[in-house]
Image (cartoon, rainbow, N blue to C red; front, side, top):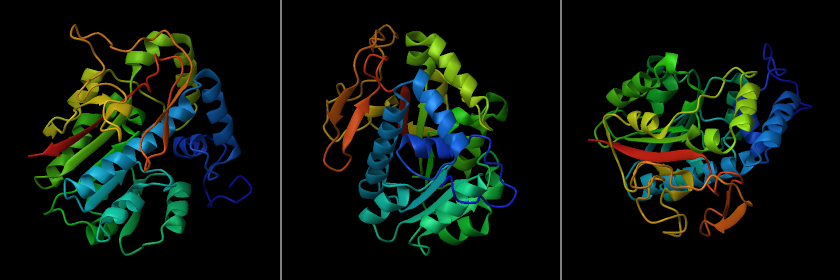
Length: 310
């Protein structure tokens, strides 16, 4: 993509987190500035690529659960980034050919590529908008054409809320989407946490945050309780808010017993932050291999959860 001319008016000299994420996943839809920033993050946080792949594996499991078990046929993917392999529409349509998906991103480059990559225009739409402006998204003609808000909708906020500053009131933003959706709708969240990062590698964490401050969307790490509060108005489905790789792994018990929330009985972190080698573990035939990040006691430093609106 670095040799392709960007859309008019788009500054590709500033790193973009969606295109950096694409690079972490081994994609080619990124520019030189994105690759340089991503490599800088990888240098100080070697688990970044493993985390991106684990996040994508979670997305596959969550959408498969929603489409196959929870009966969800409508998905609103906020801060979706590029629809690379195993994205929401691919997984949902593989379960139910009648599923509908609306991708939302504020980057015109990302949206242009998303529209070009989508092969099922009658089932999938792309909206260029800022997730922090729910009204614009909920009233958008593409959203309204594809999604029926009188029926349950899964609101996907996967690996995006840690790019929303506290001053933008992420809990209030989520509440607007929650209030606009019907009973039985779901919220899907993954979120980077400082619970491991700032304990295991404080200096490297600060350097990584500094790199992201050079992008349009700096990263904001939150503790488990802060992330849990984002689910206000939703009931967390089993196993609750857990470490990323512990959410319904394709091989139960592989990353800990069912329902383990990453904390011991005293409320302390249950993972050993002493470091160690990267571990490769199977996550079932459909999700491939999940890598556990080095330096955080074998844990990907992110929480994941799915909530259901009553």
